[in-house]
Image 1: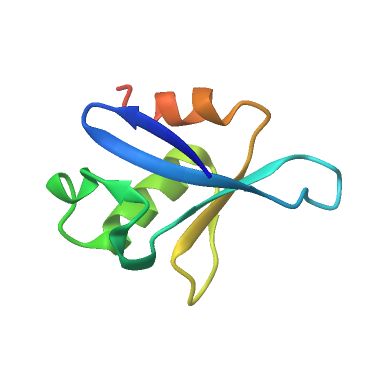
Image 2: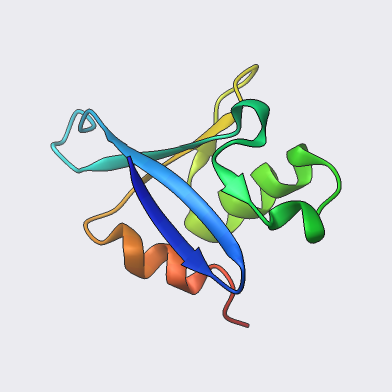
Length: 85
């Protein structure tokens, strides 16, 4: 598991299996709020945080699951772009 911190928000993400075309994929999971600290200051509802990350990362939230999966060759760059305006 890797950690990224910016603006007081810490995001933990992990590498998962490649997609069918061989592109690397990463996952941010929202179990019990353990993997994102500080984002509750922005969103009181975890579902709003999941939707924010899904839209910004171009990822997918699976129905009934509390995580976002996205493709990336440089996940740190993607996470850095989350809070740019």
